[in-house]
Length: 483
Image (cartoon, rainbow, N blue to C red):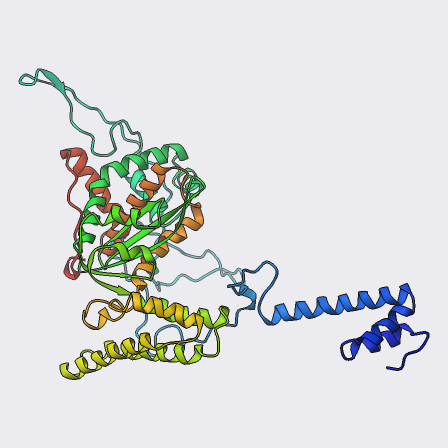
């Protein structure tokens, strides 16, 4: 640019749009006076802000977005499903079955034509339609006349037990169990449950009264909670996971231990070995399936399986957010191929001869050892190599044990209902409430896994407990024929 004594604003804009300013050009603009210099500074500031906004948009970042997270509105659309939703064309229709019991019959006949309003000529043609609905609900109030009789042997008056409600309670067992099921199994908040009972069921209850009833239910059903723990400790394969929880505003942890037929929840202040020692009160003789959280390393167990899905997600996360070096792609490619080949071999277990399967399994173990012994230069690769070395004997246990999966999805699915409850209720306000939460969530979840109606099962158990003073054993898994 040719220097001149007076530089118009348009010429300044032309200079700013070009290559980065040289020292001579900057001094020329400053020499034109304060107004021209201020104009140039403001224009440069505006351009800089626009460039930063563009860069942030391209990298899916906004000022309020954490560094490791994409805003939902910036995420790409989900991949289309492999198949259309619904059943295949030509499948048998799906509809409600014809009821085997009719409680009420209703005759429906038009007085006049709904189109023209004219009189109708009566015919004998009819059709039948069934509707199923909930009738208007009126709480049933029962007056119990309790006879007291004299026992000559005990020298005192005795009276029968009322099995319809807990002692000194005016609300029946159905109200107690239904409300607990809504809260601890479905995740409804306390205020929502109170509104359902007050308005829909026409039964006036208070939140404080419900909570006190739930505490009493927890105390009665606590032996079932202990049975779930014992059965989990004697299971062949046990999945474990943990998630954050809040108790009285302080961070606690929700621990989940699950199998195909039970789930045990525990809320504890610790996320480390002190909490695990409360659950593993004896040596675990089965296979423990977990993620790579270090606290699980202190558990004494026969076998372990670490989640390969977590490892694959760690590779993806590192590539997106950790800025690995130039040697990373070679490491990630080898590890992905190794894990993929192991999973494919696991799926072919029943198709391959035993000798072929054993040979390929040995080759996978050798490839893992070779990968660990390679002197990788990338810092992120070195970090993951330490993890692989620490869990070298825990990565491919599923190739030896037919019932052990290569991921920990079972625990993640089991803990998800509790996470939804946490989202609605924000945790608990007291340690007593957290204990009640863990006990009742475990019982409701386990009964569902075993194919039982949780409400009816617990009501029957309460009846037995109130009548005999003994809680029946925790129901076992229903067989297909028993359903």
